Length: 85
Image 1 (cartoon, rainbow, N blue to C red):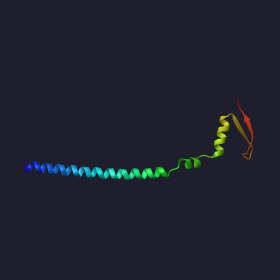
Image 2 (cartoon, rainbow, N blue to C red):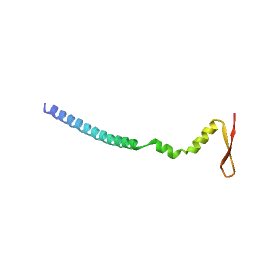
Image 3 (cartoon, rainbow, N blue to C red):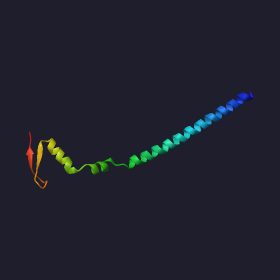
Image 4 (tube, rainbow, N blue to C red):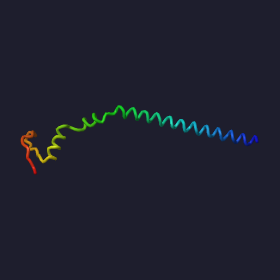
């Protein structure tokens, strides 16, 4: 009887220890997820997109897709557009 109680006590102590360890790791995971959520809420993809994309480059790509080919002068200015079919 005493032995059974001692075994039960040890098994409960181990279960409590395991649960505390799991709780600690879940708290750390929660803190990391909260930090990631805060970072993602502060992130603005439109600002990043604006930094990476120049409006004139986008217009030039659209003109080319529609069949217009810009003709550059020696000073790199576009003076004429060649229309392709």
